[in-house]
Length: 186
Ligand SMILES: [Mg+2]
Image 1: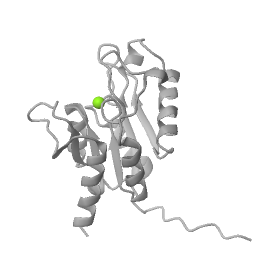
Image 2 (image 1 turned 180 degrees about the horizontal axis):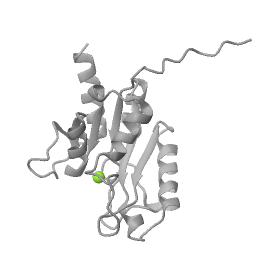
Image 3 (image 1 turned 90 degrees about the vertical axis):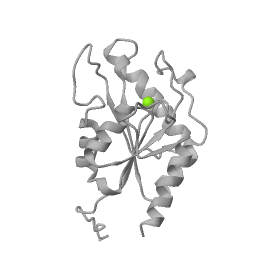
Image 4 (image 1 turned 60 degrees about the horizontal axis):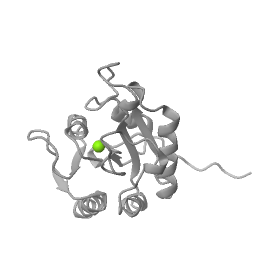
């Protein structure tokens, strides 16, 4: 009989948390929910592959308040996520999303709340000290910082006081920074 593989249930995982709109795909002020208009930012598939090859979990944490507002529905969002997986070699481990908006329903899931992160940390046994958040807004940086996750922001549209530890131009640059930092800490 074939032996079952030995799984260390206490092993901790390192993770790169990723905001979606404006980080992985181009953002649209009128919401991004149609696959035909869903455009992955160049360099993203390569960056995610690099991180995955280096042992990082890849978890998307995204506010999708357009669902609460009735602009689009969950299955349209899921179709966009499926498209993203296809374009990125299915390397994303999980999408957490908040379908709420404070004008409709308050939720701790909605960033800058920390609940999407906390769910992921519990489920995937994530080592926060070895994990990173890549986002483009203060609401991405705030919850990660509260939890002790290192922060990288894409672009400079973040208010003073909410800025990340690092600022880069895109996800590929963020991946390089993360991997260099891993090498440097050995
Ligand atoms: Mg964003």
